[in-house]
Image (tube, rainbow over all chains, first blue to last red; front, side, top):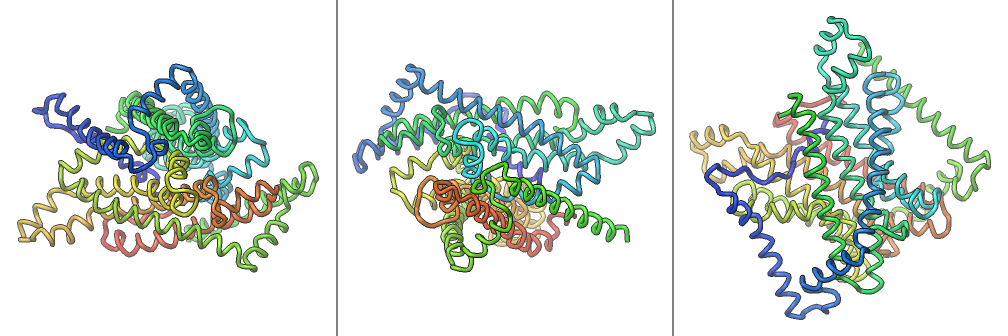
Length: 275
Length: 263
C-alpha cells in the first residue's frame, strides 16, 4: 500500500492562471467547453436521429428538473441519499480510523488485522451487495452497512500508513521531553498522521458515493437518487434520469470541493503539515 | 536476521488470525442460529466453487467478465492516455477537456447504467461502456498530471544536448511521466473491475460473475455467491499483484523513477 497517498494525487484543480488573466476570462474559458458540448447535444437531439423519449433536449431535462424540484420529489430523493451516505460514511470513519490507528500503533493488531483487510479490500464493494441484501434484507440497513463496509477499507489503509509514517524522531523527541501516552497521541501521532487520514477519508467518501448509487438501484429503497434513476427506466423517462444524474454530479462536486478541501485547509494546512 | 524473524512472526500471526476467523464463521454457520441457505458452511462453499469450476461454468462466467473489462479498459486507455498527454502538453486542449472531465468525474459510473440500458439495450455494450466510463477518468487525469510533473530542467537539459521533439517525448517525457501513468492504469483497472460487477448485476446478460451473484440471490444460493465473490477477489488480486506489479518492476523501478518500497 505504498501508493496510498499517490493514488489520490491527481487532484483536479483548474490550472493556475497568471495574474494578468481577468476573472471573467477564467469563467469564460471554463464555460466554453460546456457550451460546445451542450450545443452538440442540442443539435443531435433536435435533428431527431434518436427517439426524443430516449434523447431529450436540454430544455426538456431542465423542465423536468424544475418540475421535480418544485414538487419536492427531487429534494426528497437527494436528502435520503445524503442521509444514507452520511450514516454509512460516519460508521466507516469512526471504525476505520480506530482500526487503522490500532494497526499502526500495535504490532499484534497489525499482524492480525492486515491479512483480513487485504483479503477483503480487492473485492469490489458492489459484489457484496446481494449478500448483504440476503443477510440484512432489502432496504436501508443493507444500504448503510454496505456503504460503511466498502468505504472502511481505504480509511483503514491510509490511517495505518499515516500512523506508521509519523517520523520516528518526532516521537522520540516528544518522549525525551516527557510527553505521556495521551499527549503523545494527541499532539504528535494524530497531527502527524492527519494528512494520510484525510486522504483516506476522502477516498472512502468517494468510494461510498460511487457504491451508494449502485446499491440504491439494487436494494429497492423507496427514496434515493439511485432508485430515481433506475425506476425511471420502466417509463423510458430519460429526462428524469438525466435530471437525477445532474443532481448526483452536483452533490459529488460539492462534497469534494466544499467539504474536504475546506477541512484540509482548516487542519493540516494550518498546522503546516502540508502546503 | 531480524528481517526474517519479522516475516515469520507476521506469517504465523496472520495465518492464525485467518484460521480463527474461519473457525468462528464455521461455528456460527453450524450452530444453526441462522438458516443454512443464508450462511453456508465453508466446506459447502468450497464444494460449490470446485463443482462450478469443474463443469466449466465458473471459468466461462469469469471469461465473459474479463472480456468486458479488457475491452472497456483497453478503449479507455486508447482514448485517455493520448488525450491526457495532449492535455499536459497543450494548454488549449487542457482548458477544453479539464472542465468537462471535472464535471463528469464525480458521477458514479453505475448512475449511467439505466441510461445506457435505454440507449443500447441489455447486454455487452452497456457493460463495456460503463467500464470505459469508469476507467477513462483515472487514466486521463493521471496521464495529465504525469506530463505536467515532468521536471522542466530535464526538458531543457535534453534540448540543450540537442534532443529533437521525438527524442524529447520518448526519452524524457514518457519515462518521467510513467509513475503517474502506471498509477493511472492501476486505478483504471480497479475502477473498471468494480464497474463491471455492478453493470452485470443491473444489465442482466446471462453470463458474467456479477450476474451470477445477483442471480443467486433469487434462489437464496449464498454458497454460489460466496464462491463467486472468492473468484472475483482472486482475479482482482492477481491482476493487481502480478500484472501491475511486474509492469511496475519492468519500467519505473528499473528506470529508477520511484524507490522500491517494502510492503
